[in-house]
Length: 220
Ligand code: DX5
Ligand code: ZN
Image 1 (cartoon, rainbow, N blue to C red):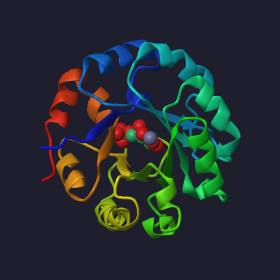
Image 2: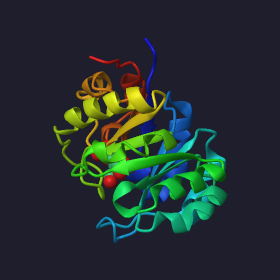
Image 3: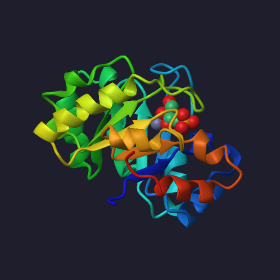
């Protein structure tokens, strides 16, 4: 069974002890570390930015999967590259010059991603898909962990899978928000190749074991 990429979101970890969260991820079968950057403008919440990311960088060998929920993300590409991001995902809804933004991310040695809010159809990506390494489908309205999964996501995933098969077969299709052990298999079957999970991992008594359970799941 070919595996998928699991990216635990440290948004649901103890912010007073992020080093412990990384230690736990390091000991686990998780693939990436999902880092949610929020600006209080694009989304109604604030989290952390480059200084925290830079502090985290030496504590894990795993790729930092940075999800920017900020306005004008192109202003911060160099800063996030310098801080140690490996994957840098910007939102379609705040990126009028997406082709230029993705190229700038790639030029700094990072893998460029595009994220879509639940209300943005995947078809808007038709002309930009070949320039992206990853598309992050939000399955909740961005801003908070622990929200209810939006069922319409399955249809979006199937439509994105078909677009990617035609235009960029190697595209990483990542799902973020309300992902659980119960819906992971169906998301993989609908076309996802990477899953983000926050509450469903850090809200359990033994996150390392939960990550193991997640990684044992295949398309169903
Ligand atoms: C939400 C963030 C997610 C969040 C997911 O805006 O982008 O990455 O951490 O948390 P859960 O898995 O708890 O829905
Ligand atoms: Zn996220």
